[in-house]
Length: 189
Image (cartoon, rainbow, N blue to C red; front, top):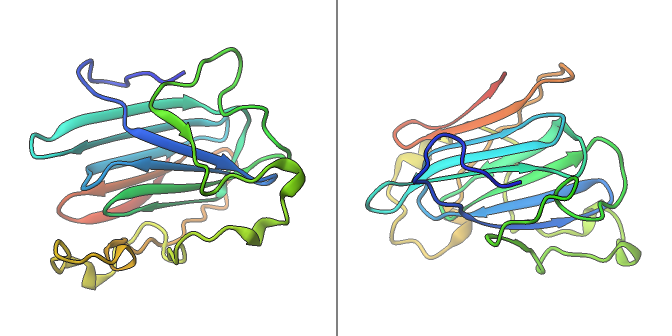
C-alpha cells in the first residue's frame, strides 16, 4: 500500500516499475529533488521521501513489494531528473504484481513500458539499457558534481555518480540519502 510516512500534506511522486526474473526496476520521476531518502529493507518495504519544486513540496511513498529483496546486491542512483532503483530479488521468479496481498497499486505508480519484458521474452539480465548510468560508485558524489549543470540538455551529464554499497550483513536495510548541499550518502541501518 502506498501511504504517507510523516507529513499528511505530502504528495506521491510519479513512479514507474518493470521486472526481470531476478530484478525489479523502480524509477521515481521527481526532477530536482532535494533531501532525497530511499530505504529498502529485506522484507520488501520500499520507502521514499524528498522535497521538490520552488516551494519545496514534500513527496513521500511507501510500497510493500510483492516479495523479499536482496539489499546487498540492489543499487540506487539518485539523479537530477529521477531516482533509479535496481532491486535484486531475494528469490528469482516473476512477480504476479508489484505489491503484496490485496493492496491496490496507487494511481501514481505505472508500468515502465520502456523497460518491461514479458516473462517468455526475457533473454537474460544483460538485455536492459540503463542509459549509461554508473552504479559503480553507489552513494558518493563525484567532486566535479558541484558545477552548475542547469543549462545541460544531456541527461548523462546531469546524472549523479553513485558508489556501490555492500554491507555484507544480511537482514540490513539499504538507505540512501541525498542532501541538497552535500550530495548523496549511503547508510546501512
